[in-house]
Image 1 (cartoon, rainbow, N blue to C red):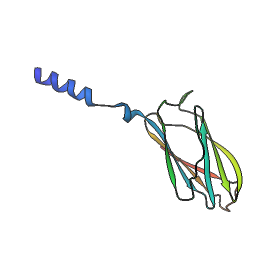
Image 2: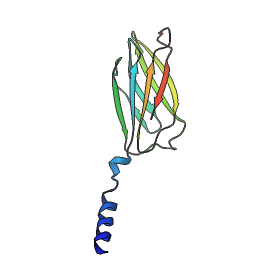
Image 3: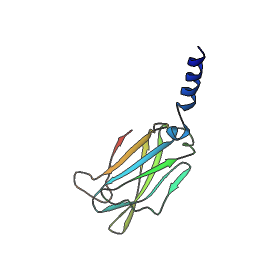
Image 4: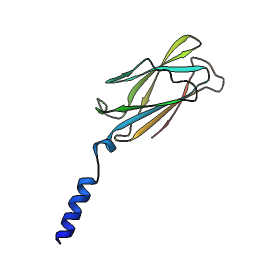
Length: 120
């Protein structure tokens, strides 16, 4: 009986760590000839970025997301041939997990047209 008690205390102590509960977001750029220069949402502003076509970047939300994890407005700024564009997308984040947002070209690629895909 003592053995089971010690074993259960050990398993409970090792079952989850704070790192496992960290919410993250991966941004992938699938827009030809555009780079993502800024990503912002409530409580976070990641600027001076240069996420080129075919690249991804992971962002960590150490403090969680203010206001909750559903319908979070994520703002993107992109650079297309020297012209800046701003776009936004409402995201449902998975608390303690990674959410991936991919910016894709439209069927006929244009700087001011983006299609989002989401996984998480």
